[in-house]
Image (cartoon, rainbow over all chains, first blue to last red):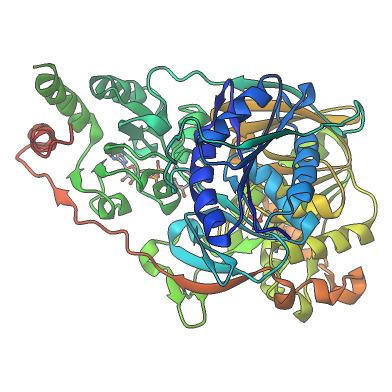
Amino acid sequence: MSNDVLILAERVDDRIALVSSELCGIGKKLANEKGGSLVALLLGGPGTNDLAKGLISLGADKVLSAEADILTGYNNSAYVKVVDSAVNEVDPAIFLVGCTSVGRDIAPRIAFRHGASYANDCIELSLEDGMLCAVRPVYAGNAISHVRSKGTSINMASIRLKAFPLTDVEEGRAGEQVQIDVSIEAGELKMNFIESRQVESEGVRLEDAEYVVSGGRGLGGPEPFQQLAELGKLLKAAVGASRAAVDAGWVPTHMQVGQTGKIVSPMLYIAVGISGAMQHMVGAGPSKNIVAINTDAEAPIFQRARYGIVGDYKKVIPALTKKFKDLLEN
Amino acid sequence: MDIIVCIKQVLDHDIPPRDFKVDEEKRAVVPPANVPPIISNFDEYAIEEAITLKEANGGKITLLTVGDESSRDSLKKCLAMGCDEAILLNDSAFEGSDSFGIARILAGAIKKIGSFDIILCGRLSSDWSFGTTALALAEALDLPSVSQLQKLEANGDTLRCERVLEDGEEIVEVSMPCLLTASNEINTPRLPSVKGILMASRKQIPVWGAGDIGVDTSQVGAGAATLELTKLYKPDYSTLCEFIEADSLEEAAEKLATRLREDKII
Ligand SMILES: Cc1cc2nc3c(=O)[nH]c(=O)nc-3n(C[C@H](O)[C@H](O)[C@H](O)COP(=O)(O)OP(=O)(O)OC[C@H]3O[C@@H](n4cnc5c(N)ncnc54)[C@H](O)[C@@H]3O)c2cc1C
Ligand SMILES: Nc1ncnc2c1ncn2[C@@H]1O[C@H](COP(=O)(O)O)[C@@H](O)[C@H]1O
């Protein structure tokens, strides 16, 4: 086994996804401690070889790129095959992926195949006697667990989005690039990628927003989300929701904040008619300031909020919108 | 269409944080008294999807769980929802298994069952959230897998699967046999009917141990786990909330806005 750290970078359209930068940052740190290099792997369709070069300026000493038409859309069988061959070639001590719909779909299969240890959705990673140690919230954040790899072959982990800082870009950094052969016969796989649909968010994306206004079951229906959008517009905010609002069919699924939704970290998160269940707070918790508007003074959201109003949103939201207008437009 | 659904029984995820207790010494969660365990949330969606498929295509649904005797309650509930058979995988050699160990146990049981078309699981367990067991099981059985499904359609021998992504969705076609994991967008789980509960109460739930399924006991249980749990504790997230009060809610809202301005938050 080498002392190298391998990371699985990702691309979105024609960019390297942010998670790749988070992975490079922590990956580099662990590689330095191990005395190995940081190797970054990028898979995708046309343009991947070119894009992958950018990973060198994010700290990768070596970049492996796999470019092939069959990798244009995500297909578990094809991706696992290519990632597996990269893992065999690098023989890393540590292999990190993002806790994304791609990373968490690949990692368990690779880990099982290699007899590796695997910690999912980690918020901290460190080394102890050369073994990977991870901090991961469990029971939706009701408890925090610390785990240590027991010295199996490869130590693997997936990192929670936004839990690790982005790495600095260092233009002109030297590094090696290797293009890996993708030899997948048509018909060899038991699955086919058909298409993907990207939701275009109107205005700011939730995960990038400095302000977020979110609604929950307490709104009682889809219409009040219009009011939240109006309030949000004044702040250039993104509108989010709880799973209860999504499950009720009031808003689409990509608006969900939480454990299985988005993780947001705005300056201000306004939670309207949301009780503050732990699974929701996994996503809303990183916000710098939380305002809660809820009729129930006992709602757990108030234990996580900096400011709160106990009362009906129907009265609070219009007045808040009006006052924001005064303050922000003058 | 023969379907196998793997479910996990867990502590009720709705218990308030203040009732959630951890024994730091034993590094274990202490279930509060009088709170019955439940079926892991996403597994209910897996069950519902299996029943929908069976209603449309015929076939049989077999439930599997690796757990102790108390897991019979959750298996009964799934039988009452409309599943046909349930098997409890319980053996002292299984205790302390990690996700990979559980996957090996499930794989052993599935090999013993023999033929099937689809294995359905939840996308993530609501207690330890490993997000590992289902895909490791697919790997153990060398099956194609599609995770976090929000929609499923059967067309002859292939399945058209829609996966939920962070910002959209993706459609893949997969051939059977395969393993799928369900997300909550996929359906609305039904409640067991009275008739279902009656039928379920008459069903036998056999127990299979390591010997029955030919699992190598050195590959499962605490000894085979790849991670060691070194610490477990309750975090303190609480902040001091400043409740904004006024004669009317409208005034409170105005005060809040002003306050946010003063504190340079907006
Ligand atoms: C495995 C798992 C994963 C999950 N993942 C997520 C996730 O990613 N995101 C997520 O959000 N949830 C998630 N959940 C669900 C979560 O546990 C809660 O059920 C959900 O967050 C509750 O949504 P809510 O706060 O909108 O609804 P409720 O809990 O029903 O709260 C509604 C609130 O509105 C208040 N209210 C009512 N009327 C008014 C009014 N007129 N004005 C003001 N307030 C009012 C009520 O007092 C109440 O506090 C998950 C659950 C599980 C088991
Ligand atoms: N002990 C178990 N018995 C049967 N199935 C399980 C067990 N643990 C996990 N699973 C299945 O694997 C899914 C993912 O669980 P996890 O890997 O713990 O997040 C669950 O939703 C179940 O479908």
